[in-house]
Every structure is written in structure tokens, then in C-alpha cells.
Length: 313
Image 1: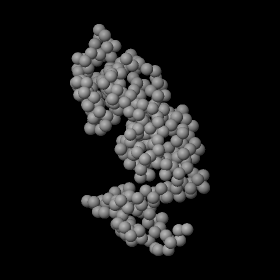
Image 2: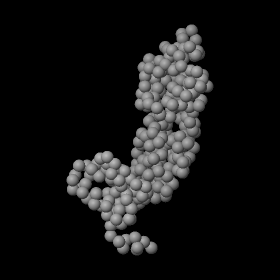
Image 3: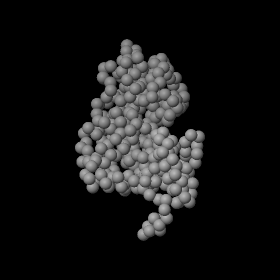
């Protein structure tokens, strides 16, 4: 059936593996880790693959290389097949298969870890968790470097996905920062004076937060910028800052120490989340299909949001 594919020299598993290493490292030198002999070998093997397929697979880009469209297609195909063969060998030897699940740091800390602690893992499967942005997760799922990921509903595109629920945002305020005469209320003037901690940069959350605040004419007194929601929660725990955080964070605070406010102008920040995966890779890696139903249960946002009760106002 594939005799014609193998009649010509230049194609081998070793060459495909070297090509994948170069593609994922972003350059021959990086893939060879400074070894001149391996660098020469990788360069020759890629040239042999280009001659075999009759197309250019990589282009020089500064000190590294970038994949052509044909190179990107070959990388996906080769990586999927090599993963499938590795998994098959491990299954035959009754060894463990490693699956990689990506999510943001807040989802990992406040949803995944508590959820997985309640779920029995299938035998012979090791789950590797990595902290990535939604854009990075979508890219990793598409090229086969990730097995599954938790992302916003609008991210997956042609990937398959299971709904996990909605992540809502609230304002968490240390009680000492509230007016002593009425600690359960928050006026617009008090809101403007609150020292806020929030995410740094111009990501989706920060952009939507600033847009919603402008639309409702809310002045934000941002005094501290941090790289993740869990670190914003740590800042709130100091008692020096208020923070706009996913409702999932409420378990981080004592009810008498921090007040939670659900404000109308924060509603546009809500986002529906899904568990996404590449169906093509899942067919090649059967353990993925075994673990997806367990992950959906473990990652239920509604269950995570109500674990510690609702103290919102």
C-alpha cells in the first residue's frame, strides 16, 4: 500500500525525529545543544527530507529557522506518528503514558488541583500540567504538542471541546479598606480610592477590564500589577490592596477578613471556559479519550466556585 513511499531513499524515523527536534527548538543549533556533529547531522537530515518530498521545509530566520507551510504540515504529521509509536511501545511494555494538559495558573491552582484530588487517575497514565495562555494552548493543541487544554470558549476553532461553565469576576476588598460605618457597602467614591492590584500587560482580561471601566465611567486606582491571578490574591491577603479576581479565588480568603462584591460593570469580563483537544491526536493517543471525561468532571467551574460557599454582595 505504501511501497512507493519507501522505494526512494531519504525518509526514515530518525530523520523525522531530527526534523521535529529542530522545528520545536526553533533552530538547528538549539536542537543540537551546541554539538557541532549533531548540528551537521540535523542539517543534512533536513536537506534529505526536503529532497525526498521535493519541497522546502525550513527557512533561515535570524539565528534560527522558521517552518514553511509544508514544514508545518510535516511537523504535525511526524510528531503525531512518533507519539503514537512511542505510546504503543509503552503500552506493550506496560509502562506509563504521559499526557499534557495546559491551563492558566488560576485554573490550575483553584480548579484542577482540587478537582483532580477527588478523581481517581486511570492506571498507567501520568498527567503533566503546564501553565500557558489561551493563545499558546490553542497553538499547542493545533500542532500536537499538547493533549488537552482549558481555554475560553471562543479559542478552540476547529478543535473539539466540552463546556466547563462560566468564570465570573468579583471585587475582593480587605475589610480594613472599607468604611467602618458600613463595611458591607461600597460607594463609587470609595471604589475610586481603593488601591487595586491587577494583572500586568495588555492581555484579554486587562483590556476588557479597562474597556468596561471606561464604559461605566469607573476610575480604577491601580497601584500594583502582577503576572497572575493567584499573585493578585496574595496581594489582597496582605490587607493592603483590593483585587478583581475570578470568583474561584474566594476560597483563598477568610470571610471576616475580605469582603466580596459582585459589581454590574464586571459582568462583561465573564468568560465561558471549555476543555479542548485535538481529535486527530486523540485518535492516535487512545489514553487521551480515557481521561477526557474525568477531566471534564474535575474541571467543572460551577462546582469549584461553590466549594467554599458564596459570600458575595
